Image 1 (cartoon, helix red, strand yellow):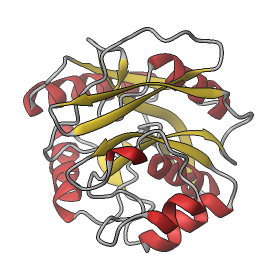
Image 2: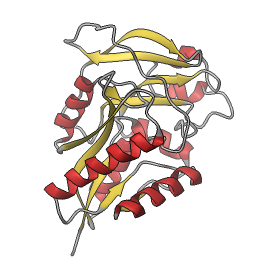
Image 3: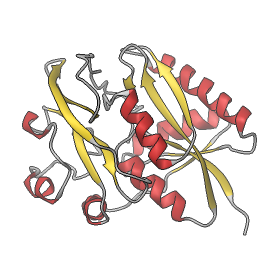
Image 4: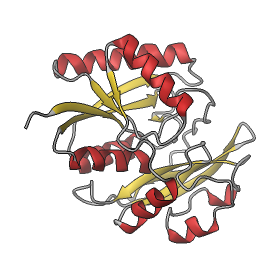
Length: 245
């Protein structure tokens, strides 16, 4: 059976984790690398606000190479796209036969259309292994199959600030207000996964400082158990078409 070699846009959260699992379960796919956007000024995963040290621990536990796309704080879409294109060029130089990039998007058609336009311009093909899945069932599947994650960012215009730093578990799912997508697909919250079937071993994390940015986004810092709080700024989530799973 022939296989298609694919890279995955990795945010460190639950949707990209489930997308990774789906790709690994597909006998027609060979997953070769992860691609992560990092805000260089903060040294954190863009939009999720997760430290690079936690990202590196995730990558070690997954066992795949990481390609980084580095952007400045408050990057414009143009700056994001230029950095993204550079990262994909580097990926293609390392794996010349890879021209498919997977995303963990679920149902936002405008986000999918943006990715399709961008990748087409760059000569790549997007893959959406979770597209159209019922998000209630997907959230339950995440919990029931042994994944563990913590909410690292909450948009307080859509969800209470007290949810930041909480475990993404059955209790939380039962307490989400009506109108909040259980997978946070509309940007209600972002997560950091630290345990689950995709990892060789779980990460030991602890929560740290809380921070409100732009009067709206409530962040909860997460760090490896051995780390000390560094007081690093946590990036505000920017609304727009490049939202990450």
